[in-house]
Each structure stands twice: as C-alpha cells, then as structure tokens.
Image (cartoon, rainbow, N blue to C red; front, side, top):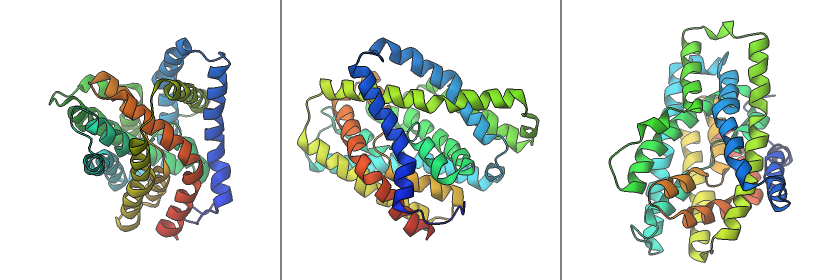
Length: 317
C-alpha cells in the first residue's frame, strides 16, 4: 500500500464499518440480555489490564517509526495538546449557549474537547494505514491520557490535586516499556511463541471493547433526557470545528507521515468515553457527557468517512 496515497471514500467506508457494526452488535446483545451490565466491568478489566497492553507492545516492538525521537516527541506533545485546545473551544461555545461553571460548562467543554482515541480509532488506523501508524497512535494516546488525568481532572474537579496513580495503568506502562525496548534496540529479542501469544491476545481487545461500548451506549440513551442546544452545538464542534483544527496541524506542522495519518483519523472521531467517567468521579454532569457521546457517535456513522477522505486529500494529496 502506498502510505501517502489519497484513499477513496468507498475504501474508507469498508475500513470503518466493522467497528461500527460491532458497536451495533453490542446494542443488540444488551437488548437481548446476552451481554448484561454485570458483564461490563470484568470484560473491560480484562481488555485494559491484559489484552490491550499486549496489543500495544506487539505494535510498538520493531517499529522503525518510533526509532526517531522527533516522532515520539511530536506524538506525545500533540496528543497532550488536543484536550487543551478542544476544551478551550468548548468553553467559548459553552458560554455562548449560556452554560455556567457548576452547571455543565466544564463537562460540555471536556466532552467536545477530546475525541475517541482508543478502541474505535485503532482498528480504523490499522485498516487504513497499517502497523507503523498504529505504533505512532499508541504514543499519541499516551499523551492524551496524560492530559486527561492531569489538566482534564483539574478542570473538572476545580482542584489542583492530580490523581497520579491513575496514570499507572496497563496501557501506559506498555507504551513506556515498548518505547524503552525500541530505544535500546532490545525489541529484536521479542519473537517466537511469546510474541505470537501477545498478538493473539491483542487482536481480541477491540471486538470485546466495541461490543461493551455499544451496550453502554444504549444504556445512556435510555437514561438521559436530551438537550437540543447541547446536542447540536456539541456535534458541530466535535465533528466540524475541532476536526479542522486537527487537520490544519497535520497539514502545516513538520510531522512524520505516520503521525499525519493518525491525525486524519483522529479528526474524524466522535467524542471519547473518558469524559463520562471523569464527570462521574469528579463532580461533573455525566448526563451532558453521555448525550454528546451518543449523538456524535451516531452522527459519525455518516461524517467519519467523508472527514477522513477530505483529510487525506488535503493533508496527503
């Protein structure tokens, strides 16, 4: 595959559709009571603690792209900055629709400010651009996690205390360990049956996570009363304004091809699930986060292929 070629819309749709079909299947499994609420936590614990870290290590080890310090630095920096820029846009827009601090402004800004960078984005990046781009996405995602659990938590809780322990998790440890192994050229020793076991475990992370995502989303739809102004403005920001900022960075900043490819897909992503958790833990408004997540995810079924197609044409063309 020519890594820099512009992808046709039908190829993009074929690449993104499996992820969305798994989300829909999760909805069906929840409604039919095959996948129940009590299954969510143990399944996601297995994904985050074992399967996803194995996937990360498998993609980072042996990655030529990550042997360049500038690629690692830019990936971390941009991942960290995305939430800051997105929240700034969200606060301005939130005030325009008359949201106030303590009454949903911070949750609104957080929810529109960060895109889905994990279980939906990763299989799409892999399908469109291959393993090298996925390895860069893993480092980018570490920057996003750092931003969420430092800046994001401080804004949401209105407190300067940072929950550092939250940063010590399976995915973060696997990214750091993988980068160190690559930097010291020790990754060449991870081959054979152990590496194949890691690959098998990692390949199962995304089907499971996307099924649970679909199940959780249908629970949100049932539980939350919608607000038209939040849904409309949140969708315009998350699927219109902020994607153009991300694509402009990909176009004009001196980034590697793999990071440009990552940002093209990131620009098209709906809202992340993380703000819902942060809002629940730190006194935000989970209902606002849930609404933005559900609405932008549903709309992204239509917008995502076209944003990626435009981004590939503008950034890589």
